Length: 247
Image 1: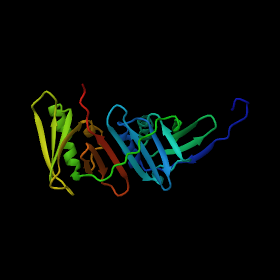
Image 2: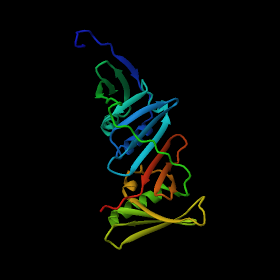
Image 3: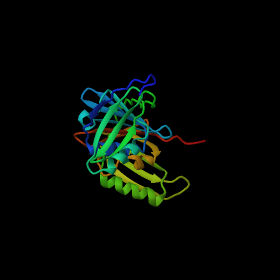
Image 4: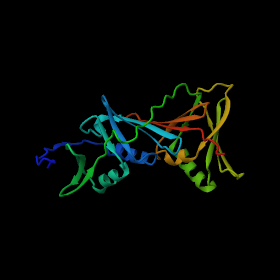
């Protein structure tokens, strides 16, 4: 009932979805738990960043992977929503739009969860990052990524330095005030022979990258990395900027 005692008619719409995409977004929620789905013609675009780190991402997926009603949909805590979806084996998701609030109902058989959505206009907006003309690139496989996770655990690594010299890119994992270092050298693509620079990023990017996937890594000499997911159906780009030494 409204405040005047007039019933508010619910507008109910079933949401078609792709659980693989919802799972990927859940992996990315470690960067920022709040998520804004925004329609852009035939796609849904999500742009988020972590205010306490130098990591951000942009995800573009076909609209049918989560075909909600309206132009925007907001989740204050996306991982909480995804836990409810994962509770069932084959859930149905319906969107209820009301004048007072908006929610989704996740159901299977005679069971359901009702989950209240957040106003996307109130949630912090994600950044638009202009990444052009990388100096060089290399291929990062899921096997490399799994090994890097182990290395960070063994060394207690805090940073990764990238040293680019011509066609070689050396990645060094290290902890400040420790002489223990792990090095891995990649062969660069589209790199100029005269290129020679070094910068470091927080090792947190390794923790935040969705695992079990392959990436192309583009590097700019001002200290910015872009990790592009190798997937023909999904466009995911994660960005990491140079770590700044604390005084």
